[in-house]
Amino acid sequence: MCGFVGFSGKLEHKKEILNKMMGRIVHRGPDSEGEFIDEDVALGFRRLSIIDLEGGSQPIFNEDESVVIVYNGETYNFMELKEELLADGHIFKTDSDTEVLVHGYEKWGEELASHLRGMYAFVIYDKNRRILYGARDIFGIKPFYYYRTEGGDYLFGSEIKAFLEHPAFEKKLNKNALRPYLTFQYSALDETFFEGVYKLPPAHSFTFALDENDGIRTKRYWDADFTEIPGDFDRYVDEIDKAVHESVNAHRISDVKVGSFLSGGVDSSYITACLMPDKTFSVGFDYDKFNETDYAKELSDKLGVENYRKMITSEECFDALSDIQYYMDEPQSNPSCLPLYFLARLAKEHVTVVLSGEGADEIYAGYEWYDEAGIMKKYKKLPKFIRTAAAAVAKKLPYFKGHDLIIKSSGNPEDYFIGQAMVWDEKDAVRVLKPEYRNGPSTKEITAPIYARVKNKSELDKKQYLDLNLWMPGDILLKADKMSMASSLELRVPFLDKKVMEQAQALPHEYKINGKNTKYIFRKAANRTLPDEWADRKKMGFPVPIRHWLTEDRYYNLVKAEFESDAAKQFFDTDMLVTLLSDHKNGKANNGRRIWTVYVFLVWYRRFFIAEA
Image 1: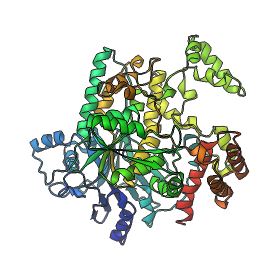
Image 2: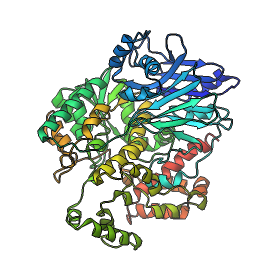
Image 3: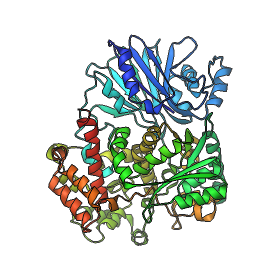
Image 4: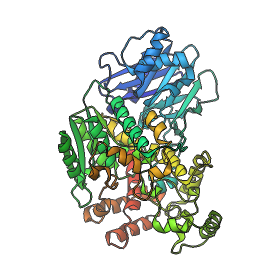
């Protein structure tokens, strides 16, 4: 796990610029650094040594040094690919997985990414063809950002903050990002909160020809396909268990110590029981229903594994929030960023690599939003044309009891489902914003292109596909990468594996959600390794007592001062914000998430645009 930066163009003082950019991401790779600089391209690399500790330093070249790469991630099928490349006559100088990509590019060219199994973002410079080629893994586990300068050159890298050190980068706030952020709680656009800085989407590769002026060309090289394949339930249980164990074995490959994150839920517990590491790590809060560490300790004891735990205080969280948003690059108000940041710090004291349980809910249908309440199931027995017509009428009417039920029972998630997070209602988000920040795209404009790719699929397929392409890379995986790398810790996610996904996307719907539980068949597979109480435990997520903190005078006053600041007045109707805050403190409403989402944005803005003016 590492980080890279780079840029094209003919500049003076390239080495000095590149070193400053690398300095911004030293936390991603504190062990060593490397660089490649020629007349047209500069590539920089910070290394966290995991595999081939002596020989894996980057950049890495092919035999005649006409191809050079900087790479962040792990390729789990690199030994299989290496055998094929050796048979073709390629000569290797290292035992690293990175060098496999260099020779793989020589063999497969711009189809390289489709051969990889792993988590990755990389850039390859082909000197002879004078092109830059790169890709991002199929789930978006690893980040990749790029920016086109006014002169037509490109900056690219693992984190946006590195761009701040380049003289051609113009730091501007993307005014269109704030409106959707308030609803989604994360940056939901391809263009980031920094104007002109874009994310390379998951499962996409790109090419940029140095001698042409048509910019970066991107293309999708993989896509999920939720197509049911009927099969025996027990046989599928066996296949899931086999696939998970095989993936965990692939993800354990390392030349350094490997541990695991462990909550009380089935996902991390299953990973831990398959891995059987020496150490597990857990955090919690000293509030009722906000602490699962006892479950984690109990399972660790059953497995004979050492468990390290930490109770996090509110003071620690508020003190760290500015740093957390700095490491995130963009405002991210998912409260689980807080415990994840401290969990990574705890783990780093003992190991360099951890396995974690992200992804199981998306690929096996674990979220409650995928299921249907009993009354909805009864209503959906009506013919679909009646439900569709009723939903169309309901959308035009003011809210009434049963309004949301009628719309959600239409069977068209395109009309109501935006993913696992919806903080500010869109109408309220527009109301609270100043006019110049109301012009960002609506939630439907963001989700429509994704739904269009699965327009003939089932309701569950559509929901899973949307989360796989929007929520997971935009929220779940981004914070997992940024919060672990903030502590120079490599986080691996065995459920998000190409082979696991191929098997999971074929599962019949009734095996995933059937009125008994969500991700039902996955729990049965986990039960082969875990006791019933862990396999069947209801999902808790990563609960954080924000709503309680905001009723305390200390934090109420802290947030109120920020809401009344000159910075806040640029963006928001601050009277509306203070009313929300006061109503929350006085117990009139639970506005915790809405308050937190605005507050996080203001903390992020203060860090990047005021502290670094």
